[in-house]
Image 1 (cartoon, rainbow, N blue to C red):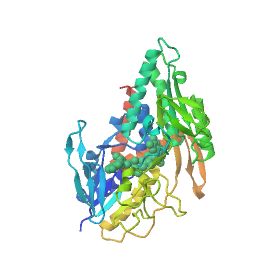
Image 2: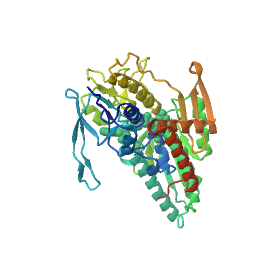
Image 3: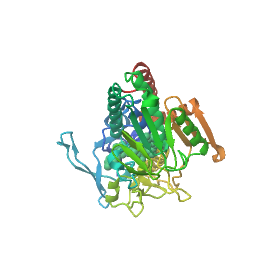
Image 4: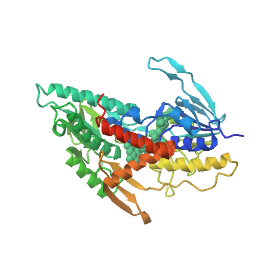
Length: 432
Ligand SMILES: Cc1cc2nc3c(=O)[nH]c(=O)nc-3n(C[C@H](O)[C@H](O)[C@H](O)COP(=O)(O)OP(=O)(O)OC[C@H]3O[C@@H](n4cnc5c(N)ncnc54)[C@H](O)[C@@H]3O)c2cc1C
């Protein structure tokens, strides 16, 4: 029987998987289901939020990728699953006026891979869901960008009669997302001032405060990386507050457990993630964070034959029993691993008995367009601290590697060059 592989979620992991499978097996055997029409590499969402990356230039159409890589694209969200009948339900799609443009559909599968990523975990903090923006999806990042432009315009206008007018931005969570956003926003606010918000002094009138509950930012990374990142942020007039537990968020104020209040016109939640809640309704085993429980072959446990999960939405144990971290490099490695297994199966060979083992190659954190900090894992798992332009080039190369996996080497090169030229010839931030 011909393979019928359905991958749900065309993100960092799922898209690489369908592209690689599609190029080998073709569109009759490989299908991607996604609730959006285009793909953007999630680690670049802080750049979309700051306006330094244009969502519409960066987004890659799934339909175009399907044509070029030999898979079938189905537009809609996974909503239900019948593992006994090996069928999944894809939601109806409605236009902006609420009119149904695509009906609900039922798709058969031989092999299913769920790769739907993650969403925010607010840990029950009152007001977090109502008064913060997260960077989980392109719409969130675009919403943040437009709101920031409006607030800048308002502060610029008020400045005429009220010299203290300013924009207060609070970022909750000093992990990679929060740190990268703070650095990118500081860089972007300088460009905003240069492009017309002339009454605003970016360092004084756009305040950026980063709140972290742990004793240091980037706490999972080596201490030297945390120190270097904190020093760069402070140098750029970002206020970094550690050991700060946020207990309540209002429309204009963030309060911590020590009774300190932080004024906030714009507040970003970057303090934690969990798997999307609907996964708990599919009849598959999920852990406390809502992730689908898989074994070290990425197969869903509990006898759901043919069903796999990867990336942020999967709880995959490592050899020491600890879960593989929710990171783009893990999603990429898991896509590679599963691709090898599924290709062997499609060729009628046994998939092999090797488990998936996560390899940590280190972590790089972007500190704006010119520099990055991080650590690379060397021989004997020793960690090497890197900083500056070299770290920046390594950081950019991760994004290019993802593009290479889905577009091929030549088009990635042409696209990278075109984007470089566009960036040099237009304002460095998107102003509309
Ligand atoms: C701002 C930011 C910076 C980051 N920086 C880094 C970094 O530097 N390094 C790093 O390793 N990681 C980083 N990460 C984390 C990284 O982005 C994720 O770990 C990675 O994207 C997870 O890949 P994934 O394939 O599991 O899911 P995703 O890439 O999130 O893709 C999920 C896909 O599923 C689709 N989908 C969701 N629900 C449904 C549904 N019901 N039906 C159909 N489709 C659905 C979505 O549209 C999306 O296309 C960052 C994250 C953010 C937000």
